[in-house]
Image (cartoon, rainbow, N blue to C red; front, top):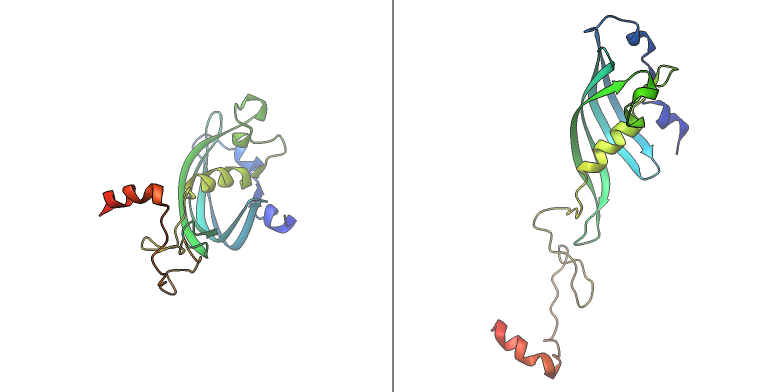
Length: 170
């Protein structure tokens, strides 16, 4: 993982912890590519994050959009899947009081958004991604991509023991 892409989403929020309750700061993000972890690289990450001082830490309210390269489960072609997330999380300070380490602000005041964004974006990735709703997939006989070319195969030989089942379809 590139160290540069990891540090793009780490910033100092220590000064916010010394502000009065209700004080807020907005951060805008626009990156061509961000690698959140070894298993997730986001393309065209745009969004904003508002951090508001509360009694227990910082209330993080974010709205982000991005794209991720996925493989279609029907035709096996790679395509860009748009993703959008919105979240509202309480980031706890001091960190030892947090139940979830992703939602803790370390003593250094360096907030790392990578784990929080990773969790939220991974939840938005479809379990069975399709390049389009009308994707025709692959030919079960020859493996040809049916979106590009049609297949014309001779009628397949049917096991005589299963011939009765085929009659049910007719």
